Image 1: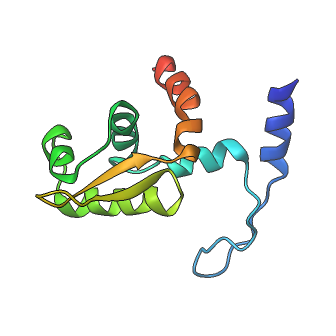
Image 2 (image 1 turned 30 degrees about the vertical axis):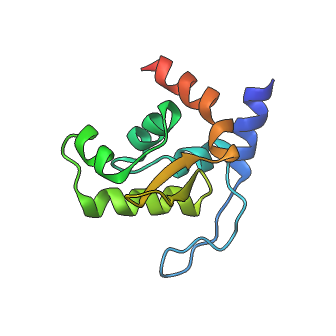
Length: 119
């Protein structure tokens, strides 16, 4: 029954678009919203790595084959903006920055794992 309710919500969730293709109506299908949060070239991989341990930028560059500074930086910022990651400045020598999952991000771990098991 929940599946039908979700499909119904997705079906009636309409967006009014401007000429610049900006979403005016903030109501979206919950599943669609989740997929948008994690969509992008490196976001799913970044999220998966963040589940395992705090992230450091230089480590991400080494771990994600084919990535580059610009695309990783953008993906990290976008994950921060939607509240899935938080930037933490570690004031030890040498000074460094880590990215950790927020409570919102941690709440998505079971959903993310379920999606992984489908593949």
